[in-house]
Image (cartoon, rainbow, N blue to C red):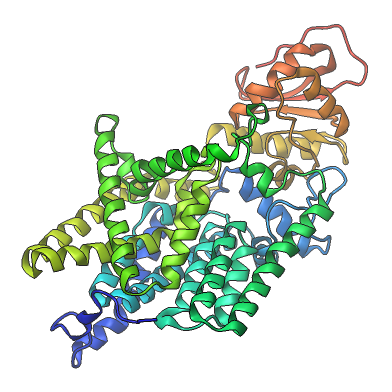
Length: 532
């Protein structure tokens, strides 16, 4: 395999790479400056409150279960069954961190992973393209609004991004598959199952390397990880829909939408691709926050960025295919096959730094085509435009976030009203419901964190009788009618309205349109019940 890439000749260009004295010192402290810039921005946009998504609470509960020696279990559910949805990697991190702190330490860990990802981005880009393109790529990633958002969320994205980049960094300079790369890929897989793309990339890389021994080792590690997790999932939760079963669903949140066939996947991939190109990719750098009247500009910006990225990927792949190319191709291919409801920039984040590196390579191609003077001017303007959009987007949230931090320190968390009601109801339930009571709700793990009461999610079904049977089957003593999700209005409220004799109001927070806790009656009553 060749090791030279377009742009590698910049090592010898005056003022671009290694030079006497000053240039080397610049290269030494430049990545540290980028990391410091990211950390400074992350602190300014930091949200001290719990991220309202259900996954954050779920990760924390799993970490608590491991830390307390209860096993990898959903202790928020009746019966505390073994967990089989999220891999155990991130909960293990939270379990260890939980011995030393709580929510704010968990958030600090996400910030550390994000900062480390900026440093790795510079290192990868410099090895592929040289110092100045690396500075531009890592600098843009450092100020990316999506990275800044996930730098303070108790979610696995920041850790997974760091591990993905760590695996790529372990194969720089065409190094063969080694223990560090395999360890990072395995850790990434057990952090998010999308790490399958990393394991596959190392298998292909070992095959290209021509070493039978390395190929066998890489294939064995991939098989142990993938099959081991699949077997565990089957033994722990035989009835839970597997990854493949969710993949073929039209919408995992609306089971009645049905499944898709093999011939439907090309259309799904095309639809997801356009969404990522026209919205999620440019949105990762702030373009999606433009006003409605200029949304077309967002799509145009996305097409141009994507074209530049693809050109950078191709022009470097022609000279030498590296693990970086394989990871991007396999990961993007995987997420394009997911149900459209999962199309989101959080899933683009892990490869966003690599996409930015290839976009920098494409920009270098502009320099080669139009000449150093005009090409450098065009690239400088492009970096300035994208960086400005990212900074304006993140900067717009700073006053609100700083006010939130001040409010939080004063003992008044700045949660959204629907979540404030949800947390308040959970705290009320901790004091006013019997210990051991089962409370059905939209976010059982998060509710458990505040209430210490077990419960499960109400069934996603438009059949009112099916919803009631599901509540009875879980042994629900109470049902929480919240405002967290549209699924409450879609599935739970109609079922309650059709069976008013089975419920009575226990407590209300937020008025008639607020959050309501209902007691579920085993013996139907005749009185009517008002449901928001």
